[in-house]
Image (cartoon, rainbow, N blue to C red; front, top):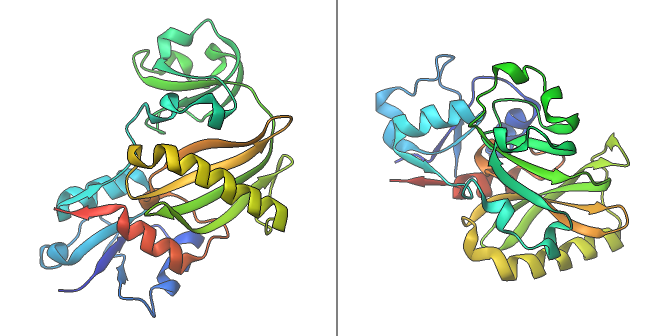
Length: 243
């Protein structure tokens, strides 16, 4: 049996880096074809998938995979000790009268997340399902944002991606890295049982408040930024379970 990872047919920098990283690994990355259809003869050999969430879900169904992720309302159950901000979860219609809030659709598909003066300012608001589930939070200023690929309660690789209102994947300072790992250890000690064994966690520094949890994302569809692709590959495989 081969250890195949089905790779989205859409070429991206991340997928290309994973493909290169797989050359000296136990895994074979295969894009198959542009129709999002894994040929029957390969389906038992596919142990993981990486790509856009819709692509991954279609391939997972074909290849009998379970794509692991936190439960939908996971973030709202995390203590403010770690989020450093108030977070709510509910139906879109519950927040129509809110002002100056960050809002994000829980299925990541309905609209682009962001800070809005009024919820009705969301592009295409009138066409949205008012029963769709969303997260909201008070508006904070992030000085730094970092992506971490985590498996078995250990950060395997990490990368900054945002610093002082600009995209930035430069290395963390020694102090930033030490503080990140200390914050992670305290967080994971309390919440590891609420997460799948392989996950992507984003952490950052809120101006005036310090390190905080941003969110959790499934490894099988998360961007790499400047993370080590070979190490991320192991986390991606761990986030997919063969049934």
